[in-house]
Image 1: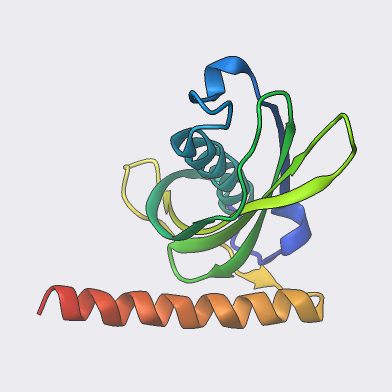
Image 2: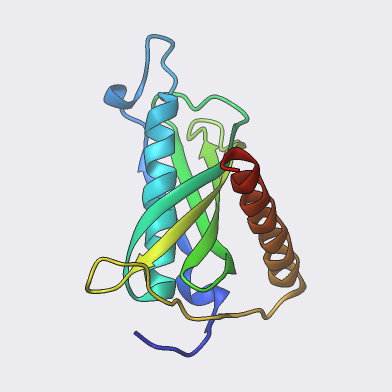
Amino acid sequence: MQDASKPVARSQVIMTQLVLPTHTNALDTVFGGTVMSWIDICGAIAAQRHSGREVVTASIDKLDFIAPIRRGWVVNLKASVNFVSNTSMEIGVRVDAENPKTGEIFHTASSYLTFVALGSDGRATKVPGLVLETDTEKRRFEAGRKRREQRIQQRKLDNP
């Protein structure tokens, strides 16, 4: 593994899915669990690119379903590393869906996930730092740091 910090852009992921009938429910909209799976995969790819390691999902901090996704639409997922600590990374994933008949694009879901990098022994291992090159990246890093602190505080309350 490289110890050098890496820029956010190096690990960004854009993943595209076509919504097929097998992805949809009786209302012809995508199952929420299918979207969750796509989010997890997209986020894991970003975490693997950043860490250079196998990763596991430690938590899904927040997942908001904003609008339905219909059969036949094209789904674009975008993942970026927002924050890194010693062995974990917060990845933000945005899901947009395009109606190919009209060209309209809808923001349909957003999520924050935490992934942990694993060493060859299967235990958590150090991840590279994050090079913040834009004001947006700096803002996302700070927001991710605050969310991490909130998760830690919540764990203390849940497990006194």
